[in-house]
Length: 361
Image (tube, rainbow, N blue to C red; front, top):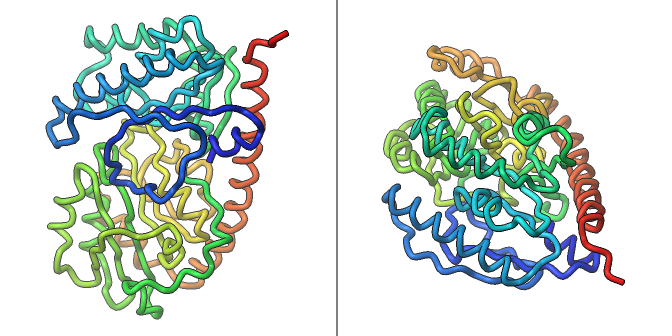
């Protein structure tokens, strides 16, 4: 969407991406600009081989970007450590860091290394050695974290992930899994990775009143298969291959979670997408996070705690159709606000890019 906006503004945009499979979908979107695809040599499940493949892909992407001699490069943070390669090889170029999952912080959050680890310190030093000219953060908490890391003198934008306009999708038919409209539909649609809490979803499954609720699960990621096995055959649970964006509105309450150690390291888009579909959400995690800070009026908070099961049981018992409809109305207002802020951020980013481009005589 950003690339399309910048093309419409008259900029020439080159997109460099990895030619791999993305389980989260998005394949039906036609990219704007000129697309260059970097071949991946491994797409399996071995973490060590995936990391080596990611490092190679990131290096190739940055190398390709330098070869195209752009005036400004917008660098995202996936593959992992792409920002490290950018810091190393963009020393003579203006660049923007678009912070999705933060590295090397994600390695600490995943408990693969500690902040005292020599390799961690080296990577972090490289990342800080060549600071970007502009930062794009996913929310105010992440923006504040990045300002402390890189210094508050850097210009920055906030651009939440998952913002979309549901206005053109009113024609989507009721899906096969949503025919029992007398029930309240809960849903978890997307990645269940290292940063998320399978314990929260297990508690929802265990506490589910099948007469009142129906839970839709469309899972992928590190914990997806295990949770699907746990949920299989449980009353009130239906496992589907996928839920299309236009079908998200048929889920009344979306489920999302983020472990405390991942706060600001990543900002999952599930809560944003649920609000943009004019639905509500339950967020299991810290109140001091962008997931809750931006959208709390349209959802419920379950603090991450040892007694998450009892907290979930109390919440599910208290949720009513009337309260859901009230929060759906709030979600519609928040969705309009998010769309406005997204377009404002696009415009501000275009202005910042123009400032960075050398003036040609």
